[in-house]
Amino acid sequence: MISKIFGKKKNEKDGDKDIAELEQKISKMNLTDLRLYVRGKLDVELNEEGLILVLEKLISKINDKRYYLDSSDDDSKLKKAFDIVISVAKSKKVTVKAVELISEFIQTYEKLIKEYDKRNKDIYHDRLMKSVDVATEIIELKVALENKMNILEQK
Image (cartoon, rainbow, N blue to C red; front, top):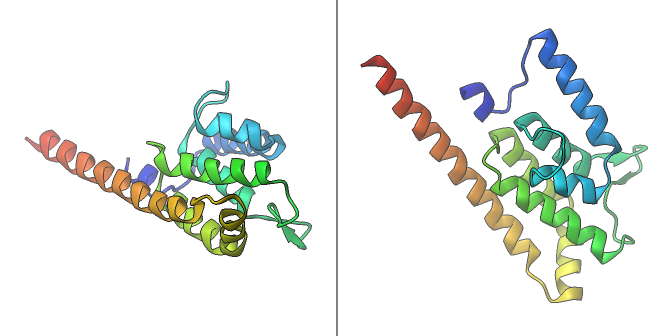
């Protein structure tokens, strides 16, 4: 359970195979599919590793030249990406690694987020910052629950 909270990958061969399959599926998904996946409405099982892979995809550079999101992208694409990150933060399967990636997303795209907010009179920068706090609270609840379960098992 603790390894799930910190987002550590399994060392088992079957786990590695599953992660590789999941990575391949996520790499082929567009933003609409990613949003459905994060919300658990796709036929692919939602798990901690999948959330991390989604965030890594959004942060990654394409051909080492530009990031996945760019200022020339449509507002609808930017909005979908921001909503995906907020949905990951609200997920019950969020991990410490995912929170770190959310923070990296905000830092990477801070200028882009602020430009989007100004253009569309929206507050995604604030919502994304609050999503980090929400994710941290979820992790703290998970840890507290894990501690209580360990205490009950010892009795």
